[in-house]
Amino acid sequence: MHFNGTDIATVAPYARVDLGISQVPEGRGIFPGMTVLENLEMGKYHRKDRKSEMKEDLEKVYHLFPRLLERVNQAGGTLSGGEQQMVVLARAFAAKPKFLLLDEMSLGLAPVVFLRLIPIIQKIAETGVGVLLVEQFAHLALKIASDSMVITSGRVSYHGPAKELLEDESKLRSAYLG
Image 1 (cartoon, rainbow, N blue to C red):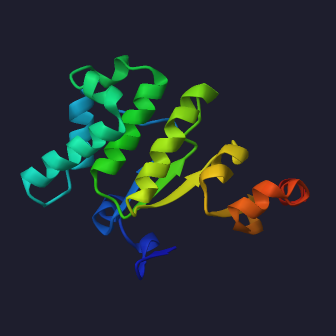
Image 2 (image 1 turned 120 degrees about the vertical axis):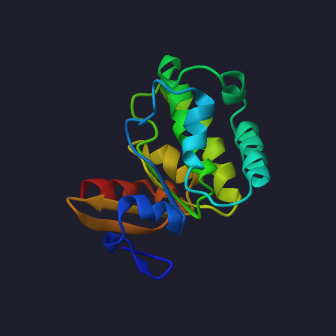
């Protein structure tokens, strides 16, 4: 895999953040004993820009996730699953990524909670951040995606416009079932 001309397989995982890549792994990965603010500060830990810019970026995070501002001093481990997912997504965004990898955002969440996260993912993409969303709820992911890829048994079974796959039930069925 290459990102901006760099083979990221040769780059240490921690150094990928310096390239502009942030990841939200499945299973959340929150720091349960740290407050919401401390979790968010971990997202901007590697940054070398001015503190004033970091403060502005935290304000952007709170604009996207107003619930987190209400919980700023609460320990991450005491939050609901949806709030924890907001924290890890906000933490990744606080790193000021150029590219955001989201793995199974819906895992362990009620569908209604995941539906609240989708517009936030769209807003992040609208800021110019590239987003790769790996998601089990294909219909929901396809509604916000511009491009789609279905991988079956390690092979690409479909690659093309998300809207085309979403609107053609036979193509969707064929991509998933062969």
